[in-house]
Length: 458
Image (cartoon, rainbow, N blue to C red; front, side, top):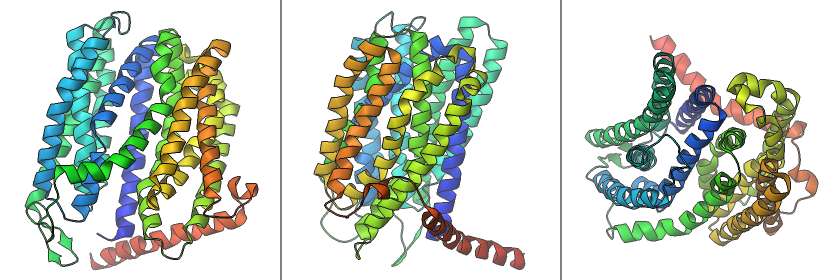
């Protein structure tokens, strides 16, 4: 499959997955309301911490070695299975120890452990099976399945809420969400295994990645872990630092306030996911840059990101006070004021994506590690300082200040590789939009030409 067509499909299905995920978020918010939503997503983010830890960065290592055909897909599947078997007892033991009756009222320990097992196994299989699809040039497939899973989740959730009374409907929604997480992981892993029967075309002919590797020294699990460890530690620190408020807030706020905070944070998260669409492709571009011209593209992407965030933020400031309660329900009446505190951090969270990708691409893991540590340390310190002073609104502001401090370091270090002024980091100008338009046209032209030829042939 041509690279342009592959990127087009990837962006198309990831966008569709993002929209369908937002629809599920709205449905759960309206049905569960702010208090139960706070408990629900508090559990989801706690489990996301576990799964992020237990990947051990193998999504990076497997992607690298599979793409280079230095390991087989059969070997990758065995690693995924072993990792799930190791993660489940460790994660469930943590939840057993961590369980507090007041933390998730109405959910017994046996249900909590069942939900956790589904989420840990499902997410791990989803993330790691995606590396196999990437190796086969089908990295849009996980997003494609994600759209179908989100659609089924949305439909069953609405039906359950309409047919079941009160508490039974809430429990049903928990089962649906975590059950489909497991189903998605299993479906993707099975689909990835079935790819073994197909023979993708490589540069040197038809190759079965399931049973064929390039000649050379064999690659083992130690090699994969060693390759993955540097980026994994940094990414995990970034992950924890960005979500520190979510993990500490249950001890300082009511469930209703948590629900409002989490929904506001999820908007920030969605914006970051959009910026992340080109995160891994951009790392590859940086790594292949021979002429040293990629720094100009970093600054261009930062300006485009800041402009997009500014327009989005102005739209939210103008309409959010009315739209948030209408979309998510009247119990989310505090969401607007909380989101205002997130706006400075939204600029940093999106723009820093491109600096992080650049430093990974040139192999300077240490810069990203220091940046991540700055965000984590400042997030913890500012949480206690600002939350005590301004409550839940201070928690959002603590996130923003920590993200900005991390980005200031990124920008300061970037001066080693590119001379720029403050204006180069602000907003996109007319020439930037012209360059973007040309890039989009050049990328879409081959796709349009292929479709035209197919229509003529038919």
